[in-house]
Image 1 (tube, chains in turn brown, green):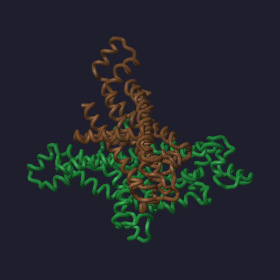
Image 2 (cartoon, chains in turn blue, yellow):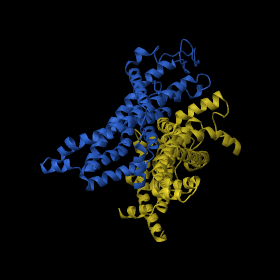
Image 3 (cartoon, chains in turn red, yellow):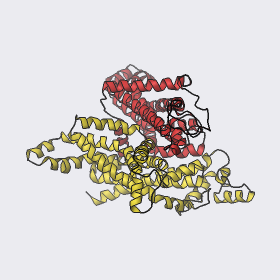
Image 4 (tube, chains in turn purple, yellow):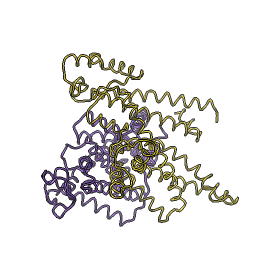
Length: 281
Length: 321
């Protein structure tokens, strides 16, 4: 399992020197998605819920720029409103997982010994599990939709994140400032949270963005299987699930949410990589 | 390589795999109790709830016993190959799994070949032409690869090659060998793309690291052809990290495979488990999850043994810790 762990770490650390223009474009995409998420009802040309059964699934037209779905709902408006579930869940997952992981990683990396062994065995076990499969099964059996999915993903994300924070803490341990603090009689808790934490925070911050992208993909995936959001919710993954059958009559109903998932995830990954390069060098 | 050492390493890894499987099986068993409400209701599904059926179900799943005894009896049945009966259709779970396995295995095999051949080749080429336009394109492809889930890639491929160009069928597994291959091409490509970025990135990084080593300079000085240096010397050493990452690649293929099967409406194990989850068919979910989990544990075991064969250092450090 040691072998596996190393590879997980290697997979998550990326050194991509993206062009500055690309990073700015990525930030622009995220800002637009955020505006859609917050002011969706002001921007969308139509309500995402209005059904026109007589209209049915129509290709793009002047009235409906991205066409309509099987129930005659405006695809463009649904995509704009879909930004909400695409942002909120992943933000909660990335922030939640890294808050827990930072606590565990600090304790595990700094204290070492038995505590470290127990935490790292648990991390090894969690990483050996196929996370997407666990998410599908647990969310499906427990029920509860979107927020259950968020909770399950927080738990699944915590393990690899803990490993990253612990690694960063281990790099800090031998540094002189920690010895100095100990000689001065600073308490362990204070050393951990006042001295070590600020030094590992940059790495944490960069990984939070990478986690966000991964969480977005996983949440959209669960919605695509009909397990995430409630039926009818405007959500990119759910739209791909509901509109699977109209690929021929109105491809835009699938292509638009699909493009938004990729675009948002790529943007977050680019910003995360860029931040990683800037903060850790 | 010492045979006894290797045997000891394999035994040690098996000894680790057994508790792992026990924990997983316990988790899978606990799914019955994880479902909201009375477990007997969860196991009943849509069947009529007459006292007789309820009593049969309680007896079948030993629901009147204490939790841990239930688990023991369930595990004993599983070990004898009895995975229970599905709620919908009352089929034997094991035969449902066997029936669906072939599509998943063939799909996985084709994708693995694509990933290894194309992924490693692209990684090598990118490393050889470091800094070139192609190399930069590969880096971008890497970001795109981890940002595009298999179901989204699948839908895009379906649209371009199935709808616009009409080259490939849009659903189903096909009949006969050639037809099946034709039906499985798009799904296999979608699945391969989901993990290929990792292989390209690892191969590229490992190749670049190897290229800077002294033995390469020496080999060049001896007049060995660049092609021979690349494939016989560099690639062989560069593949060690790829083997290391094989566990992630297999888990990635397995997880993305579930989504690809659903996207392309293929009757494999992945769509079986999603179907079971959507219908809350607990015995079927338990059976398929258990098969997937055993597969992952087995693959990890095999990878660790291969890794130990390639790199003797691993054997000793692992046994020592």
